[in-house]
Image (cartoon, rainbow, N blue to C red):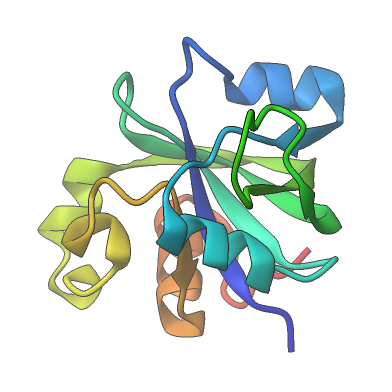
Length: 142
């Protein structure tokens, strides 16, 4: 069974529109060990929410892991990795951080508990709930 994730990007640095325009893009620049471990755990075909941080603070799209972890070419030193992400679809309705925080069923989502983490796992029930909140049908996978 594929895992689910959430990846964050500041839209002024790299936005959903850029991801869509580029189709497949390396997810570079992660410099947190927990986030790095999450990148290493990703498998080709896994899906992730694309979240605009700082500006917007909302889930705006879904991406798919197109290539598993490999050395991050933007890292000057260290054991940093990146994955390639492919745009899958926009969320019909963006899911805001305020909406996520307001839902008691989502209280233990890492986005709420570890707000600075840039790459995080999303459980199957939380994935389904967030998809529904974003206007996708029950059980949406592709």
